[in-house]
Image 1 (spheres, rainbow, N blue to C red):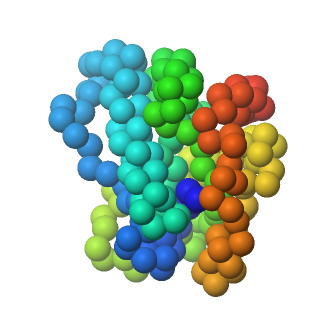
Image 2: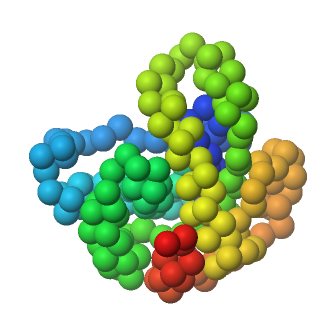
Length: 208
């Protein structure tokens, strides 16, 4: 089982994910090689970040195979980020539009796919800010930007919930409840892991 823990910066994703044990966690990865810059074409950005996301999804598959379940600190697929950035006015839709056909091919090829559970948490701005100020281990320089992304992040996962309502939960369950749920599920629970129609339906249901 692959479980995604999602929310904005300072929502507490990393703290929640680590409660399940380091061997189950798929953290954010450091970027590899030459990261595309502002002068690079949208296609270059789309290709680079898709490969980055594929690395994280493969890590989730490996952890699932070894330990039964993987907890992803943010979604490996992560196409929502470029969409949210554009909706919030921080960039255009160019990268997102370039990325979707590439992502579609990657899903068909079994290189990246959908999780078994999405645990998505909305957090009030003052609570997130207090948690940011209380965490001295991370600077979170773009915190205000991430705060502006939250309504669009929720729109994305609400659209996904309308496609796979049994997969998306808009809170983070208590550890013992989630562990009980994991233990009650069979390994072959998600026949839609590489179902490209999920992406197609999701895109159709996003706000215009």
